Image (cartoon, rainbow, N blue to C red; front, side, top):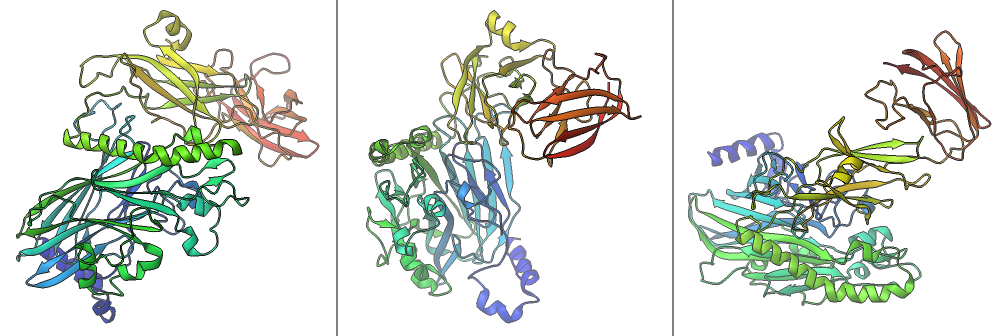
Length: 617
């Protein structure tokens, strides 16, 4: 069946392109892969259906996470938004069929002509009623058949839990669909690791290509790991070249991948069978099937040709290969190989907005602590893998969603969230043990760093229930009145259990929110909300239920409100140095405005604006 599917796909793809078929087969393809995102934890990555992962870019004009750490937001504005520790990753397969060598590449830079199944993504978030603690929070499956009739199923898994959110575990299930046995079969996981990519992008490159090859690489056979980190501090350069910019360390982490599990090879050796590091800028043409024979690349995959290998500790633009084999694969025989990709390093809070005197100390910590943190992360992944993805302890869930309501009239932002303490049961202890909520906020960016706004809202204390629980809507609420003019904020609310375990920032708002905006220099973007107004769309804050707000105003200005018949019912003189003004729906004679259509106008020394407003009661 698989062979029929493969042959049909070949015919349909190439029946109109026979002249180029001979030079194309088995080397490359032109197609845009489908993809799914791991975007739950602190490490984000893009998993493609063609066997690759990482995207930079994946489609023209579109950027997606590529070992983005700290991860997010979901929508990238371009390569400068990403903390990309990976350019692209892929897999190589090679061996002998009837004495003839073959080598096929599914990335990272050339793509085999294969048959690709639709991707699957399973969500199993801890806050879901159906949460299964024996499974990952995000599971993404890609399956394809190579041009050499080898079926590969890639299963990648990620979690949001603290201590387990800096890695993604990837399992490959490889099946020989050929009627013949494959001898001396090797499977290779290939990574173009580039921890310095973000600072290179931000500095728009520097000098020639070789000077950008500044990632220090290494191999740890003890941990079955290949790793890399940005090797140029360069904080003393006036141009800011290197991994520093404006007092911030752009790439504060070590990135790597490690083997978790693989069958013993047919020669009896433990796996991986081969570690290989090379300078991709210097040698990339030697890794192209279009320029070389399958035998020459198979020699690299199998470890028989190390002529292009770089030494551990070299500063290079890294191509890393970890290969497994040799195996003897009978017809329909399947082997399973598992690896983990991971990033860890200095806390983001420690590496931003530093002055010159702090940079050298941070740089020293970066080098000294980075590898230890990466090793610790991979060890956590190994323990989780060996325990069939079951943790010894589980944190509570964060509230799934936060309602954020800006109140310009009070110059505050209200947070509203559903209680989770009454429904969530710890899967290990069987207890409902959520003790409190913590509210975090940042005025910097989605990835933070976040500061604590409220360090405890205790779910079982009468005082906190009276102060923060709204019995009318059966939700928790907190009013953040310590905000500044024209500043945009991100929020997150976590839960903490009786043992002190805390959930992750899974409910952050990706669009920043302002409660009070700065006054504008014109009237081109004046807006009014809510419009239409109804009781349910108004601001649910005591005393502000009837509030209607104009935003993006110049100051000073005058707002005039008219009935549909042209009668002036309210005039608001706005002179405050902010861009917002509110109306409580009372007319000049202190009566509440009736339901209906109203017209409004804004007059100022820099222009005018007009519009309509619908009030529904």
